[in-house]
Amino acid sequence: MTQTFSSRAVGAASATAPLAPLSIQRREPGPNDVQIEIHYCGICHSDLHQVRDEWKSVMPTVYPCVPGHEIVGRVARVGAAVTKFNVGDMAAVGCMVDSCRTCANCKSGQEQYCVALPTFTYNFPDKHLGGVTYGGYSEAVVVDESFVLRVPAGMDPARAAPLLCAGITTYSPLRHWKVGPGHKVGVVGLGGLGHMAVKLARAMGAHVVLFTTSERKRADALQLGAHEVILSSDSAAMTAQLGTFDFVLDTVSAPHDLNAYLEQLKLDGSMVLVGAPAEPVPLGVFSLLFKRRRLAGSAIGGIRETQEMLDFCAKHGLAADIELIPASKLDQAYARLLKGDVKYRFVLDVKSLS
Ligand SMILES: [Zn+2]
Ligand SMILES: [Zn+2]
Image (cartoon, rainbow, N blue to C red; front, side):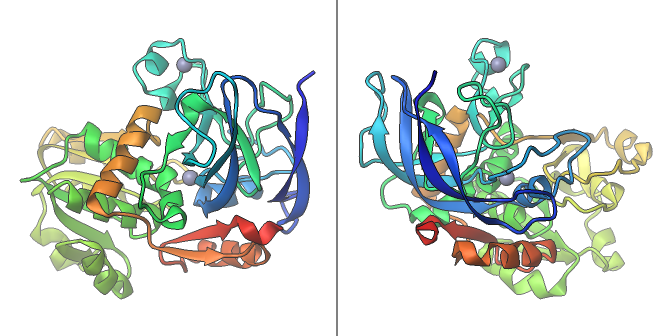
């Protein structure tokens, strides 16, 4: 039987229970494992969906649920066969803690598309201990070193945490579609994902245009790196640039009109969805036919690519804009997250658990 140790955590006992302190078991590190003393964990909108069991039909929540997949901390222990990490290193874990490692997608470094599904960081069957995996709202996590990232020297660890989901989710499609100098890129929505998309696309050398429903976000978007801001309710502004974009990254998870953004694309332009509205959305196929446009989706990024993203952010001085909160403010933070009232990511200060 696998040996375990106890770790303090915060989680939900049911879909309606508040987030409360609890104790969870972590496995003792095996030969290839790294044990991380967690310092910070970003609070992703997915955490809220999962805790409240809003994805019941696809990924029902097993309780207690300890969410969190934007993890940064210090290496506390390493297994005998670990080669990439030493005790004391700053390390990070994102949305996955394992995968089959043998399918074509895993072998090409795209573990997020593992045919057997990667082992997600929380609420996914735990192959070591049974039950489900527990996320980063906890003091410690034990992960195979193949799924642990290096936090580059000099990076603020609290501001680095959201890069592990919000950062990679936006970096991966920008890279896959080779966004760079000379490209006009639209970012739809300025939340946790959107604010990183603006920063990253700007650092990659693109001309960045933010689409938002909120005039209040104009000044922030420009300050974060957008060259232009278009209010989606301003039909004159929406019409003025129709058919001129190379790429549109849509980060909105609330229901909204995709067609209005598809029509911003020029010939062979691509629009990629990284937000996930729960309900199907209407698609006007004519938006695609004219100008041979493409509509695609993208999910997080592979481990190699996540490291590349962290190194890119360090090189360009990029990190998330955050609001650091103690565990006692988690429920309040969730309520504010629901209203989109955060600039631009809450990060849990894990020290507050002790
Ligand atoms: Zn996330
Ligand atoms: Zn695989």
